Image (cartoon, rainbow, N blue to C red; front, side, top):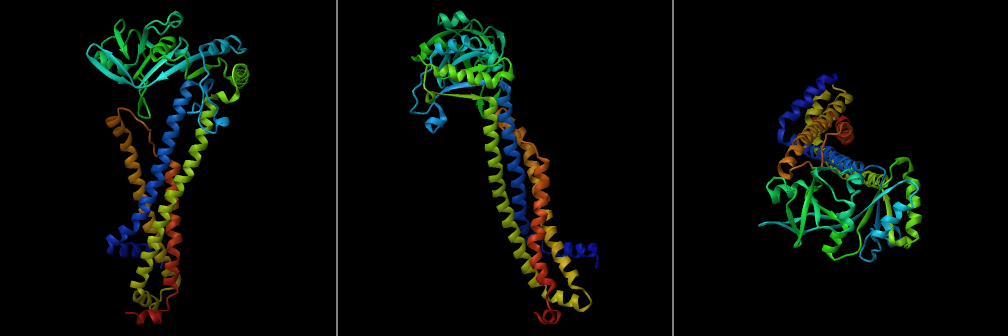
Length: 408
């Protein structure tokens, strides 16, 4: 009996028990679908984060209070004393050998903003300096950004994001109009370019004002972080070493952390790799369970068809023919389940991005079917079918035809 005859008989037997065949495949379907979806989600998340980090440039550094290594926790933790002052920014720029540009940032969230009778809570109130657009690649589409004299004189001016323009000013040009932040009146001088949402946070729900004004409004003399841009990316590492030496002249090593975008990318890359392994193991367990289901059903099938096996052997069928038939059935179940799982995963991925735009106004995690994950899932499902179908097939092939013919 050739392969085609064996496949035809196997397909006929599986079609006879449609519901049982489908339930047997269900574990494989779920496992394969999980592999494709999880890898797609992890890859999409990694791509999104890398894009956001790279948008600032590999030559952008972040100086933040607290040392994660010394304090055994994230920078800026509850036991960290913030020693950052505006004078630190001036010192770093003045003593730099690499013409760095440094920008202080004082961020607070949830402030109440008001225009006439309209009131809302804004995601981000950012006190900063004129170098902010240059360092963050965040341009002004209309009007002007904060000026040096605004910072020196603590002027009550600000620039706003597109969300503020739409919600408080109905989309009309707000430049030259007033806005109240925590009861303090500010004059709008510019509008920032649209950035959209990043992981659900609206980047355009922003008010940027002179850092001295922000400190006055919030009653603080410190700053949350300093972002630094090294004009020549080749000098980034050298500039980092110099900045550390300069900062250590004013504070201890446990008082600050200096991070680069490339370091953030490496850290997240390592985390994503671990997550891929963990998620792969979870999906693999699902496939393993599905394989056990295939083996159990095939053992039941062998027992049910013992008399059929005896008759076929009695009329000349060889053990290899019986072995091939039952392995073919197991592989068919696994491969069919794998194909269905892949198609379902691709369908979900195809629908996910448009649905994110509808319900979340933007694509939070860009999903794309990964060819490698599809091939891996398909091969894995085939191997599962062969592995878990071998024992029932061998048992069927070794059945004594005389005993089988007597089986009721």
